[in-house]
Image (cartoon, rainbow, N blue to C red; front, side, top):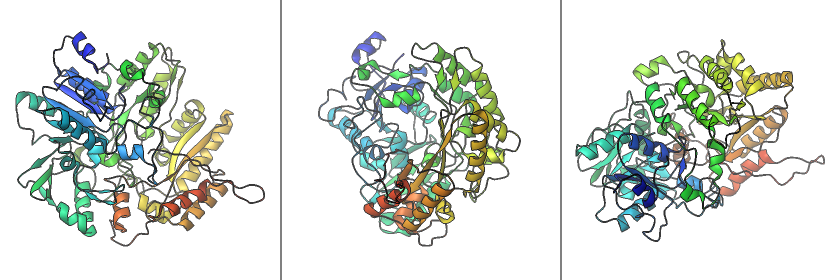
Length: 576
């Protein structure tokens, strides 16, 4: 069943009014990969009447009031991608394509979508039920933050959007508690994973907005305290003054159990675009997620340019093999399924099925990372469950191939002395669709240190093993390398070194080179804004000139003719 998006569907369900209306910057794809769909299905399971309005018209009330006002609350999200990242390249040029919009044209997702949609609701819905923000755009902007697109420190998005509450993180447990509290008229101020505005101080005090907006050292202190309290086991309530009011951030919600992960993914999904929006044109994102299976949330990589740590968390939460097999069986009954599962993974595919036992009981370490600079001895990578899962999936009637197109961590494979090579052999033999994604990002040690990435020794060892196994299988397969230009600490000379490395050692001219985008709530963005390493407080070179950023990328993507003259570089846009 699709979640209703028209009054005809609401009436057909026998509902006279909706309890909750969810508004999103994406079109409505009914898939567990889409947060709006997953949240809506969870709330319906709990007995709430839920509707979805996708990409509403901003000039009239025809879309936003299409389902009438909700009885309990509005839920607002920018969608699966931050709206500013979706709308602009790292050089702040307007993107023409949007994979989550019918027809692919980027003309329906507004800038700062969370703020825009909240204003739209308040403009036309009077009196207005509570508005609750969620999704990655709201989650990363829940505290005072540096905004790359305006080049300034902005207030918590709760203040700019004038919303009532904000659900941060994945949100699927928090939203249930919040909805029940609203229904029963109970207070919501103590629910984990909720941020709100208060007239009184509470919890640990962060430097106030006025101070962090002017003082980069205070901003670094505020961010460090914030980051150290993003773990659900050890996190505390935080408070940050914004003039005469206070932003209150409750501790994060506890990570989901395997049973809870199974529950939300076992709900019925159509794996298609809702017919109302499908009539508007094809949606590219559907091609990659329709017959793909999410296996887990979270990532213990903690790459400093990546927002997964702050949004999904550092603890990996895995589904059971039974739940994943049930989803695969459902695919085989779909008329459009051709027998190929297009992806089996998560933020990093080979983190499925194991975690650090210490982290699960005591929380993430404050003084070290799981994988950087080396893999912690208590983590113990184990690919056995992933191997067993792949074998069971391949044995299902109606399944021809299972591909792994999510990125992998090659250092985890090499560290797993018991099952790592067996996993790699099976991966190369049966589960690579021509190319396998890995993300070394750079080759220079000082740049990698700023990124929180391991050195290139493991990459070269992995490439050697991958190439040999591919040759043994008689398969012309290759590795695709994600690389980054203009990260804090990276100079033009460093990119020239990267070019030599890719040419001499990797034997390739990379296409997957992206220019660093300073998204909120990452350590790399903190470095970009302050020009200092947040751990040592020493100066860091930061390239902020757009022309020179492009030159850094061009150094690596440029190929050479036999005469030595360069071709015009091939540029590929990527949203990370």
